[in-house]
Image (cartoon, rainbow, N blue to C red; front, side, top):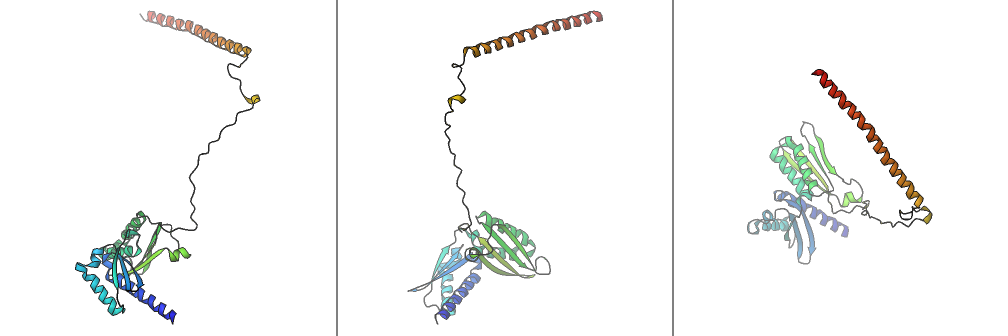
Length: 266
């Protein structure tokens, strides 16, 4: 039946993915794309270190091709190598990196490893990321530690179809530790995302006021108003002169007192 054929094909593809992830885990493996063509199966391996995948004179590629023919019964597998543009936004690479650091530095430094990798992923431009470490760390009982940052969808079609997930297990002296990664890349278009338009400066031209509300100019003022203003200015000047005249005798009296005091002392 056609349904069984499709199911068998998908199972074979998932097994090939698991095999590639196991063999190329230390070569910066990301993922594998499989396409059926008239000439055979086209298999594209994406990695951050293409040189290690190819090997000396294509030795590793020949070994992988021979294994695929024997194990999965592929007629003519054509292997191509693709480069990963931004490794820190690739979930499989991040998971393998955390597993490698746990093997190298031990489980006691799991917090620094988790926070450091989370910060690197967010600095690479991710919208949101989550790292979950499960196992007997640091106590004898198994528990889970969660490191998260940013905005990450947990439900709905976007969480299933667009948020990238990866799982890796690493064997340590304390036991097996599971690593689960979820990354929301910046190229995802959210349906509930709102874009605010830039603020626009609107120029409003003021309309001229009616004549009854306009203030008369200096030239249009009545001569009586001008005379009143001159009288006010003259009165202000006279008041200033009077205040100066009052201050002058006070200063003379103070000087006389000071001179009289000096004579007494002598």
